[in-house]
Length: 291
Ligand SMILES: C[S@@+](CC[C@H](N)C(=O)[O-])C[C@H]1O[C@@H](n2cnc3c(N)ncnc32)[C@H](O)[C@@H]1O
Image (cartoon, rainbow, N blue to C red):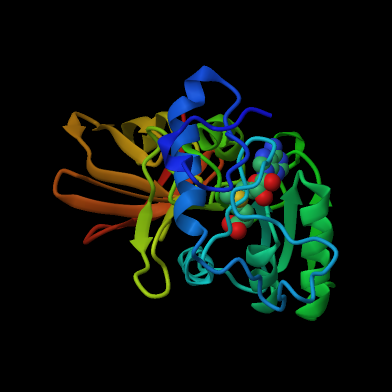
């Protein structure tokens, strides 16, 4: 294990750069900043105290497979779940679940939640924390590599990883069912802009921003809309194109919900595979079929 040369790590008990490649050097510095700044924040999970987790007490900044361990401040965990508008019907997955706090908080809100964590000690700690919080039936933990994990059953995915890791996950996330919510603590997803971003100021000094993405339906291509051709060009949730000869504007997706303006008319509707339907303001309903 190489000691970090980052000045950010100077004088800290940071034992591990998280990035393994040269391309991730910036990410590594950021990650070490994680640890240097977050150490002052509480590392205690809901329902747990360091005293009662006597078998294993993790260190903020300790080695992880692709990312070191730094806990998300509880106020941001709450904000991330609020932004995803979670309900008890949702199944949540936290990728790199650390001490289990996000999974446990979700379970406390009635969700079925699963943590994926590479470090088996953190997995055991999370299970103890879930027991202690009384939610072990709904909060479960798997010792696994997040890159080898099937994400397809999740309605909500949370993560506190790095931009480089998020970008690597992006193609997989974009294949999830439209409407799946992805929430990241602080780190972005390359050129896939978030649908929403919020920063908490209370009880949070660093890594206090939550970013939300909603997996968009796939609509790129040609559609027939009530006798006219709708050409859509899709860049993640953003759309451009033409309805007949008119440019469309203010066009985007939110999961399966689509909206755009053309010829001064606002179209809103829902995508359902090869068809779309909805309302054209002031004109009545519209339907579309892939052509
Ligand atoms: C920054 S911590 C976030 C912990 C937790 N999600 C939170 O927000 O408090 C990142 C976690 O990811 C874990 N991790 C790193 N690489 C991983 C991988 N390839 N698969 C699963 N977990 C991983 C680390 O052990 C660490 O617990």
